[in-house]
Length: 253
Length: 253
Image 1: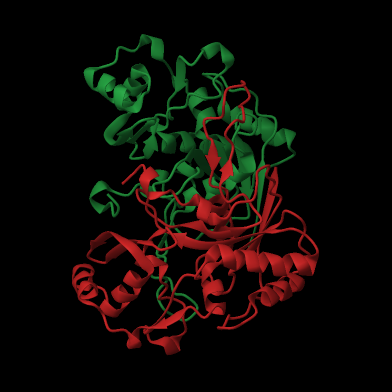
Image 2: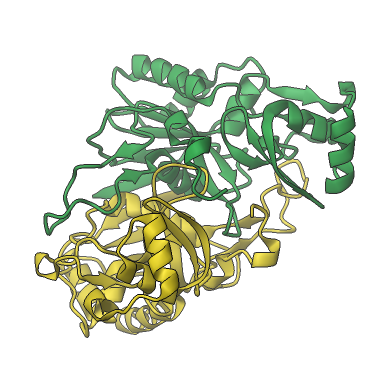
């Protein structure tokens, strides 16, 4: 199998209310690319959030008692901590400079994935960007628009760069997905010796996101999307929410 | 940036003592590929282990008391559990059908990464395959051979498919690396607004492995290597051991 991963040039700074599908279609056109069936377009959660207007002004927040306590432990702005708690269902770890929570999406992330970078100098650190409200829905809406425009059936993955439990460094993760088996169930398949595959479920959307983020780079505002071409799969489509390990099946906590 | 990821055809079944670098050079030749500077060759840990003869015959193992206890809890073969413990420094989780340990490499993996699949029908489940003894050293030796042959300076990543703490499904991970910044320190770099990058360290070798495993597929014996072309980096070379989060800095346990 041969994959190509092309970071897309020509996506402008995204503002609340922008038609993100339209911006992607224009950027693809500028790169001379017409999408084909089984192309997967990976888009950073940051520009999805921006288009969806997921900004929050910390200036308007009154931190709760709990947020103040956690702010003292983590040495973070109590208003930011309050914003994190509003996105969280569980605090996984709080220590100096570290606040890891499980979000209501089921993601375990530092600061609930709230982004304080790359928001423009005028924001003075007061305005932060939340994750998309429902990343799978965002992916599905983008897919529908792109499918209609290109008269094809593509996949869309919404990516973010996240830390891991036992590894340093961030890698791309698939927060939202449409048109792909985000979790690829390979149970029942055999290896070359006829034994059942030891790997039975593949974190497909996460791997696609990791690959795309490699091509996009980290200072992602300029290249916040990438096209992955050459993928194939033989499994039903599933959203990225399928990748979330149910709490009772959590093998590591 | 545009990446291409090409799974390599023509790598035969690897046996203990095989010259893996020679097999890779032959396969690359068969695909008409001459390696160039900054190409990264990703090779599964499975064929590295096979070439290094990292087989273990469970028939010769006498399980300890502790292995028997854990075998009862996990419902696994006590001899396999003994083999896992011999590779482990810590048992992270033991419950029915689950045995997660920290290996002496510092990897947190199910069954210490011991592979029971794809070993040939003649093995009858008795012979298992351990991870490479020192994956960074294995990567460095392959790089030296390939660099000398192609008169260039490539990167090598040794991959495995592993599970994650809070996510279902496996993704590729970089167990060993040479010639690349396995952990890419981006501290001090600025985003487009001039603010310090929020992402400060990138799990580069892990992302490269995740991308390559996508192209290789899971029934990996036939396509156990892939060439990633088009990567660039501006950071010192670091081995994959740099990716291991030191136990005292573990944010999640």
